[in-house]
Length: 258
Image 1 (cartoon, rainbow, N blue to C red):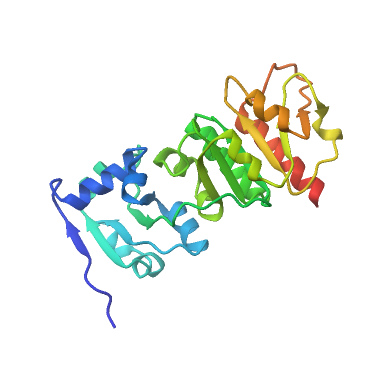
Image 2 (spheres, rainbow, N blue to C red):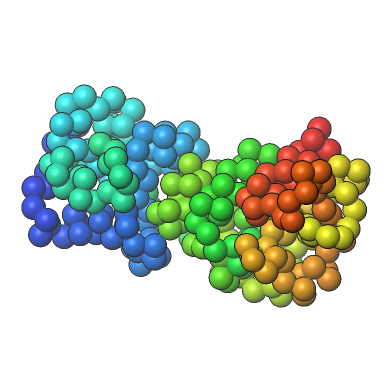
């Protein structure tokens, strides 16, 4: 059976076009709509690889005749927009000719025993996305984001995460007290005190707590940690970017586990 003809959008006044633009450019639109805009080949493939099925697949008019079947035949409905409208929707300097609109599942509760990365008011979208990528790469399955952290499904974080979100359990809007539900030990980093990371015996599973770019981990969480660890910096810098520190710490846990 031939797939249904796509819905075609040729006007900026179209309500669906306006919804797409909000999803692509407004950091909070995903909450209001219950779905996300995943733009470009990489994000779309990442979603499909993790078993996500798009509600809508959106194509530029010039790309639609060339679209591979893996993209053109997977969504509930296809939408084709003029190239100019596709560019107007995009939040990217170089707009992609393809995007998925993906429905979000209900927000999950904390999994008490999961290897977890706790984000304590990490505000930069690029840092948060990078940390999600590191978490997925090094075997951590859950992100626990405290209030004040950049929204994990916002367009900038989704792009920075390169699709890591699709394979992680994302729990947002938590208070520090909510972490008492975790049954895995908390580990924190410090620039000036604690054991050297490369000499420490790291537990698995665990929850690494990574803090605010300027203020670090809040004292109430640091006091509850079973280990405070510091990263050797023979070059003499005062501190590392939080995303870089996260990658080093999570990799150390993965190596210790192997």
